[in-house]
Length: 277
Image 1 (cartoon, rainbow, N blue to C red):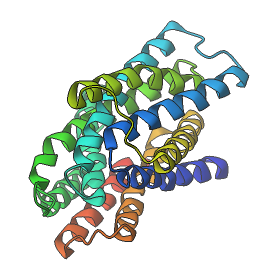
Image 2: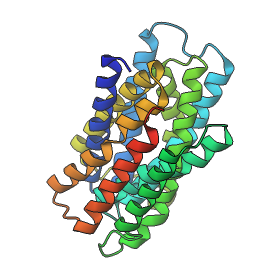
Image 3: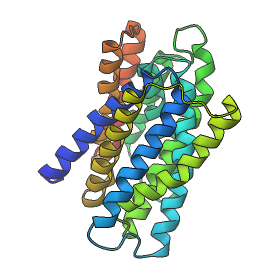
């Protein structure tokens, strides 16, 4: 991994934790998430117009971009549902750890090899998630689990689609803009069905800030993924679990020692699972 890719990946991890924290501050998470989608779409579509090279040189690249958008829509629905019911640190650790566990069997089906290190990593992550618990410890926290699991599966799916789209030659801004264009109506429709007629009871500052930071985080991630092995990028990006727990602490969350130990185990397992072999 080049120093530039290393810097981009670490920046992506920090910024990804940051935009989740900004979203958590919004009182109307449904509406705020739509603003995040729209902001990301506007910025990346503008960048795609001036980006060098073709946006989608092959039909497969466009197809995977569209598929990634479906995953992004599902992810945002799960993310909002979880953050409404549970703390940021607990939700994010379950989503990232669960996504890696969901992606692992998929890798086996695609012919990736398994070794003792991977088995140790998976066992460690399972133990960590067990320590975190099926509920967040807050009133109503147990109802967040279906949402974090749905988000985890969505994360595993859209990350695979992003990698396949980049492998087919897609440009990062066009890829993310297309994904957002598909995910935006999914989340907007979900919000409309859930809340009824559209209302904009939202703090625009955190929502627009989250959209901007989200866009930069994903572009850093996609550019790094384009120039480096997915294993190396995934390893470093999963440090976002630690950053998110720290931001949750700043926001006033106070996880138990057991939950902190669980988050550490999930983080170490995530790094170990993605470690280049």
